[in-house]
Length: 473
Image (tube, rainbow, N blue to C red):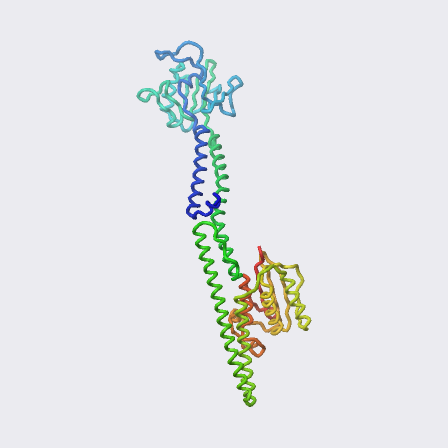
């Protein structure tokens, strides 16, 4: 057995487990890629000594005072912010960690609404010592909980760090302010956009996979449902193939067993009724011979009763045959079948017409469908003097409408007329022919083809019979 067939033959529980496992693996791979290839969500904190270097200070002396010498170069782990940057000489330098902007302003930065005043004052004092300028020449603004102490006792020193969103400024000799700003990127920031993009990619990868697994799980159920519908239209349909998961194979085997039992019961019933009918004909024939000598009119009445009993037996056998044996199914042109019926009845002088229209192809038993249509048209002619037939299609259904000009059928009896041996006493009784199995036979053929039949009285008088049959896929 091929690996793909082995997977298909697993149980539904195993299929579901594989689906969940595949989804987890894809999610884990996406998360691993996100952690390995991309930076953290927030900017890294910046040490005060690095901020002092960015503001143009000399490195501090061992004793705590400023050390003479050239300014310390800026740290190499900062990234310039995009818009509103400084002049070209202060060009921003890329780095994978921080978003810092260095500007030279005419005035000190304004105080924002949310600022930790105590932490800002402590950080400004420590930064003034590092730079070697008076405390009033340095301004530091930090959001709440943005100072990460690095010295002893929690007091800010050179090793302290300022978190994301701080502003630090130093007043220059010409009165302007050199400012370092930690830029807080709004939502979604670069990392969040990358995370959302990867999440969308992961979802795009998971959706087709989930769809394929769902199709694989539901395909056996879909075939099973199609087989059940096919059995309703054709009791002699071949058994369903036993494929798919274990649970589905067990259900298919049970369904095939049920189908064989139903067909066997139908065949046994038909044989039993046929044998009873055949055995009844023999004593009826003997009774007819023995009653030949009866004087009229008693003999004529007895003979009529015997003939009626024989007709009832023959009709009952035809009804059972139509219910159990519909004939071989094949594709046929329903309009052509109706045209032949109309032509045959028109040649006999009946008033029957078929509305023009396109050809309609369906799958069915030709003899059974002809018997059904002939029965309906003959009923329309018998009880309504004329028959007008219309054939059309709607979505996946072929619709046949047969109108007559008769008295119609009361609404409370329109379903009862399909019951075996049921007769309307007014116009459709035994005097006009039939024993009440015509419409039962019609409905049996329609149901065997997966269709439905309805009756309705027309507003202008007469009865309309509507037959709907499914079209092949």
